[in-house]
Length: 309
Image (cartoon, rainbow, N blue to C red):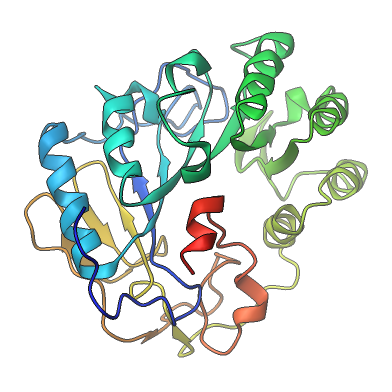
């Protein structure tokens, strides 16, 4: 195992470097509400880079050598559609902790026994258009029983609001929290989330009891947004978003600082926090300096990662 550098940012909140890795925007599902899937305004997924598993292992070893063990959030698209994905995350797990957002189309037995549950968190996204809830719950329960930290996601799309409450109850019965993701986009000639009725908003508020869901709803309904322009932020210093082509940026907002390309070897995090250029940052979990109490609770890691702090 590579020896980490003497100072690998563990004393800077949130305690370790976080990465969102959009490994691919391709997906085997075409959900009506997905901008990379079946939504009316869906575009073609951008190019996905395939440098090979060995090259990815070199890349993540190099990042470990410079910044220590990171927490990597694998998203897409569907991460498990990426070629040789299990082998890739097995190798990554040796030096980094990770989590993923997945539609769970795959067999959990492919993961169980191959990855230490202490190294991973798994967010399972239920999509009623493509899978029965019983099948999805069975797979979720299997991962939970194997010791993985699991949470569930449910998109609050107008046509599937009915049934959302029952799903949340059944997830709760097996010890899995369900995050509610308010739909953004066009449906029935109306623009959401603005078009949610007061009754629908009340339903989402009643079911969205987790702190991260509450904050997500605040932003969706344009409530409690904070002024961020010119405030110092550690996004780019303690966080990076990596695209399917390997390009890395400091955050998701327009004009985010470019951090180089991980595949080409030009990637580097910022040495210091920078001033936010957004009047009101659309991200409630942005790492504003001196406001750590508002966002630190979001940046969590698997059990093994917590021991490293």
